[in-house]
Length: 73
Length: 466
View 1 (cartoon, rainbow over the protein chains, first blue to last red):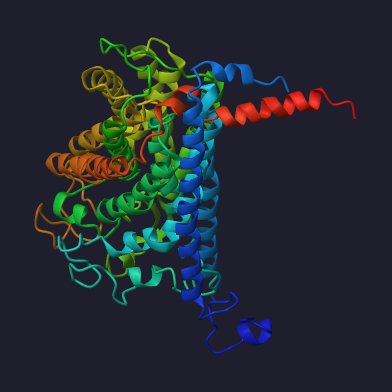
View 2 (view 1 turned 90 degrees about the vertical axis):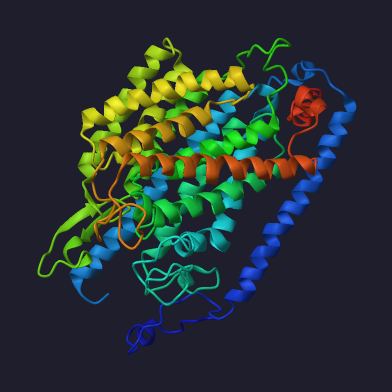
């Protein structure tokens, strides 16, 4: 994975390579991973939000019921 | 970097933008505090998390496609040719400022010894994106789902503001060439579009339960914690300093840039690469803040919520031309913007039953639009770019700043790229049943379960003996 193994060799080359992160050339796979994380996050949170709100809606609390849950700590 | 002067200029520019990014982070801190202060106790935590989560969502999508859009779309496409390659197509060729270098797989989108500037410039623009999405966030509190807000935040933060920046903020943007559009510190490209987008959502989303009486009279809700609102707005002011600095290029030699043979002229420039000074814009920032506060205190009869918001509205209104205005002009323009924004807010609220919880549409949208229109008159005749001067509607060179062009520009920002997309996306989300939280949840409070769990924990802990 290491793109640079010796800084003296790297910086004294006739043309210094700019990209120094590990795995140069694997950017496409990294972007696919990011897409999966991004879309997956929406799917997971949308499902959990819907389920949490449906559960709460069924209880039909009043507008001031939350006041009995205010803690002192 | 092998020569000392070139290295110093590059590293200074890199550090300059890095500082602006850190300062602009305070805008988001301020928005979060402001929203929590404005929301009711039973909604606090969800309100905070909704605004916080736009940070990763807009950041990820800005990396994936938002930054690319900015560099690809200056020509429209199809509206005016680029000065770099004389083509009106998307700019994806091999030219220096092409979008080709900013696809997410590019090796310039990472640590790269050959490019010290792109990363900090990417970050500065990303912070603008957060601001655009955060403006929308405040207007819709206490009734939008986090899912819907996430989608809308991505739309404004990584798509529509990026398009408007390409059109009206890029040195090669078609709006400069055809219309003579000028918006140095983003009255339109951030504030008017975000205000319009928020209004489009609010039309579909509807008011909070209890906001309007059965006869349609509006009721005042909040702010619940005026002190948090106060600190939040002061932090937004502070972050706005960074925003102003980030809209400048700190050091640039305009002689060779404009093709003037043998001329060397180092200066700070605005985003359009026309000269200004950091000193001058700092004076204008403070004078427009002062004008906004003075006018806000009078029109709102000393109400702190609106007075602080008016300081912000004042800066926003003067921002389009604050690279060139005299400080007293900036102050007067700010005062005019505040009077318009404040009165329009209450007129729209009564007339159309729009519940803008924090006045975001007024402070950002109406003040931004007013600022663009005023700028067209006050800066009438100035060149919109240093590269060339031409006539309106031609497109091969740059039109001068003028009232009609700025008026059309304001419509494009507020309505075409703001209100209409916001309304359409909100309609789609509404049609899917994903836009608004259930009525019972809104009444009980979004945080009901969290509060109940905390109460149970407290009981358990206080009854424990070991």
